[in-house]
Image (cartoon, rainbow, N blue to C red; front, side, top):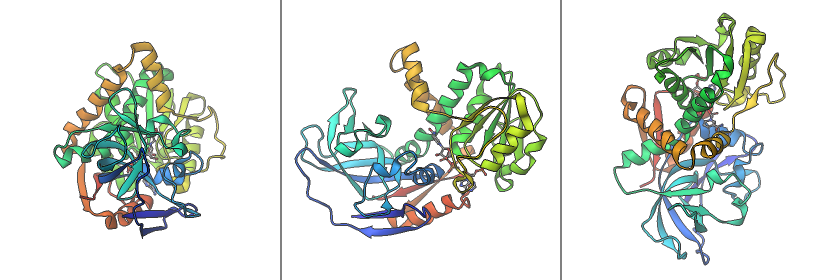
Length: 355
Ligand SMILES: NC(=O)c1ccc[n+]([C@@H]2O[C@H](COP(=O)([O-])OP(=O)(O)OC[C@H]3O[C@@H](n4cnc5c(N)ncnc54)[C@H](OP(=O)(O)O)[C@@H]3O)[C@@H](O)[C@H]2O)c1
């Protein structure tokens, strides 16, 4: 079994390692990973590995070395658990490796959680595994690439509507070329009776891509933030770029009604302690919006909306996404490296296929 170790301190340093698979203990099941997606989100997992705790999901037993979590699909190839039979396919959170051993427990909703001790205190959303049918590999690829990101885009949209956009008539999206960012732009643009403008912020190299999405009223590059019209605004930031954030805050002053910190795609320009003018940026916690809607609408409603939302954009993906399938875990380091240094093309969605 091979896995890609990532250095905790220098997250661009990776190394493929061969490990002899351990024998299963009672109650465990071995999952062979079929395929997984790699996007800037996975680099963020590494960059915030200790601050948020992503290194704790899949410990390596090697000091200073971690396994970056990925979203993908795996198949049970060996089971010593009465809960899970061989052949079951599961979508969920996996290490950047060829296999994962879990301790499955039924979650009461047709799915499973990994009930291993070290995951008990970690956010439940990452411990859940959902059975999926064996179908076209392309379906696995699309789910792994889009579901985790566009679910957040849709929840951001729902949260903005729920809060009447904080009185803003301009929604500014930082890192608009990211899948999470473009998803939000697209959901905001879908609303027929909208009263707000959509402004996408991006880098010069990705500007044409964001313009081509056709979802933003205005596309500005990061060095043109001072051109933002001063009017009631919300900033939803997927970039985490401290300088850009400071410029957005100082340009808009009191007109900035809310500033939401969602991601750090510019992980090397992130400065969590830096001060900004005006409103204090608040971390967007997607599970809180899910819980709020469950309380208001009953279980299952927001989940159905999320599924319909990401599938709606997936159906149109030909116009904004090229899926690139890479063969084998040996390809993962280069793909991860390009995502980490920001040289990846935003139109591409990368899949590592291990079958
Ligand atoms: N809080 C949550 O619940 C949540 C959920 C989902 C995603 N997110 C976060 O949202 C962010 C976007 O993730 P994604 O997977 O959607 O990204 P993605 O599709 O892989 O987007 C890549 C884009 O990010 C920017 N970028 C990436 N690496 C960079 C670098 N080293 N330097 C400068 N720019 C870089 C570029 O956009 P620009 O040129 O447009 O800046 C690039 O086009 C991540 O930080 C992710 O963790 C958070």
